[in-house]
Image (spheres, rainbow, N blue to C red):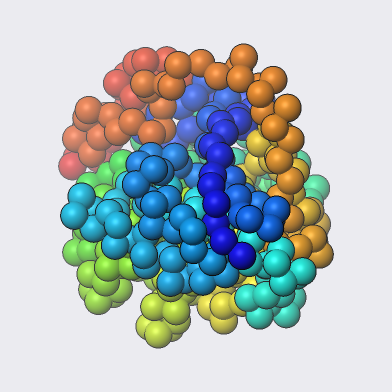
Length: 401
């Protein structure tokens, strides 16, 4: 079997509501989702959801190779870009191709990827994650009621701009989950997406912990700040979760060496091989791992095979337009199916039809870091609709930096 080519597509995820975090909001809830399809000479194709950046350069590393040599091909792709570096979107391209190769390998074996990787249980524990900072109270409650209906009793909200508002929203979500669980104590997490300084993060979380018990605070400071993560960890009761934006195993070393992270995360867009290696590295330090992403299907399969998987992120309950996935959610867990490979099917006609919804790539939103991030002395007004001033308006005095 040989790799003969690739195709790229772009579909959309229509959330049907504003989505975003402390850095910004997509008001229309429509987000682009890039797709890579890898072709072989035996008719098997693999699907990877991820970037297309520099794909011609990266694909040259695997063209003509046997896709079943996937881990060796992963390293070969890294070597092809080592001069410029493999960070950011290029690492996403490697991850998308890597995921597609794992899909091919499992299909060729006639097995779902979770079984090929040595998984025993097809159920992957999940937590609810609404990417919800742009929602009002009623919308927030309605959203988490849909998660609760699927048995989820642990949730992560977005925040970091206004401690009083974060407290109110966490309490609302806690009440929804507690009612659905008939009094069972729910789990709560807060994700501030690198929006705070070290001192701000300690003060923010410490204030929340006066009345709330948080499982973790996620990305409290910049992703690479090992000392800063450690400072925050020493100053709060909650665990520190981070790693989703680290692109390469070497970037985890200073965080783990400093004892700066308690929950090791990896993003779905970086690929299956990356997750497996991060999991092994974390396991060597007795740390749990948690996959991150809207459609983390590749990492869900991989999670069944690692001994230190804790819980996986569940964002939207619907897949992107034109994508079907052989899994469902029940009793608080993803349940993987028996389809060979990843169980992803692509309807290219539906994706082509969705192109009319693709606007010019957004210049504002959660993917753009605000100019004054981490340098605000006032809490930010949070509303249900994101405007260009969303992160620049101020209302009530926040603790000093």
